[in-house]
View 1 (spheres, one colour):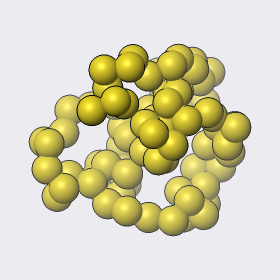
View 2 (cartoon, rainbow, N blue to C red):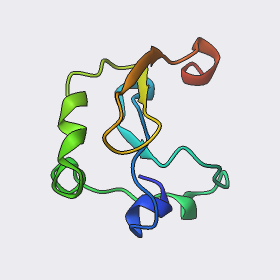
View 3 (tube, rainbow, N blue to C red):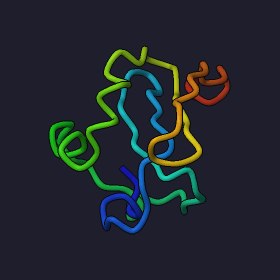
Length: 85
């Protein structure tokens, strides 16, 4: 999860599954550095935002994005160049 979500300063607006890993992001820019991210258990993420349970069937190498909490999730495949590096 990105630091913004971890610190509760922004909501999850982008969920990505590159190579099957779950990434919960605010949709904003981040430094390409480990300090911009935190590893947390899936249960903690769902406890903080139950609407994320709508994405539990999100396939590996797919992502889902929404404009705001409560808006519809739009699912798309992750472009190959992103998840094959």
